[in-house]
Image (tube, rainbow, N blue to C red; front, side, top):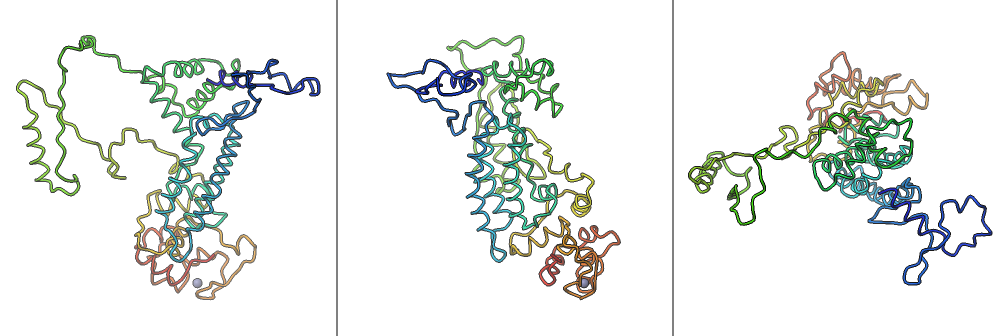
Length: 413
Ligand SMILES: [Zn+2]
């Protein structure tokens, strides 16, 4: 496809450009004869929007990313307006807004963005980082991998590759898309030192190699039919009869006995003598309670948190990378304070080198304000179940006591 597009641009080139007044190198890629349709000359252009994606001359998608960041900016401003400390939207609402109004724009073009330069994706990543800080009310210097783990949001570069490869895996088992899949297979077999042209297939093959999924990808084929199978003639009756009887109410609202009764009735209604009966049920993820999760991808949110830095280790010790069961009723200023404790952070005085500083609650001078707040401060003592290892204290203390503590004595800034 790439080659065709580039050719299309070449053909569309050079309308009404005086050839003699420009340096020679500017015309290398441009056609000598302008293309015209119904006697209208088609203007030469270096970029064009097609199905919402900006295609540029060399398919770098730089123009598309500029366009995307411009679209995201005002949406981030709306998100910021939603985050008042008193009565502002909570993490759940902000996350939903982010997914639906912002990340969906990036997701849409993921298959083409997967082949762009990482430096271009970095621009989108910065916008996601800004959104993460808004969601969690975290300071500018909070560790990014901690923010992503706390909000359970994966890095955009990972997500873009995930979407693109999942799409390709889907195509690999569908006979209609054999050409596109064959080209990726071809690129996988080629030696990168010899084939250096950066085509879509080559970059996609590189992404597959990067996640060590070559073997799994090569196994993706359409299942062959059974040796005895032959396509039924149009006049023959269908070899399988499926009967579906819906429940009288939502599955979750019916008691088990009623569910069993309805299942037996449905079975009796569909039974035909001499026929086999197959049972099926949707699969439910026991943790997220989402139904029908055919592929569960371990996204990099959890594993990146343990990168060895002090604040990453702190986060791991406090949370074990498990979700934070926060009640929905808490005001935002409480939840942001709780998130900050879990994230672990340097206080302003530490960054400005103005230590020691007096604790704002008990006036004791300290060189480590956050540690003092959790392990030594006499004011917070009655709320906390203290442990010699400071982060464990946060894990042992019940939620309601933590809430009371941050309400009465805010953590140091
Ligand atoms: Zn104190």
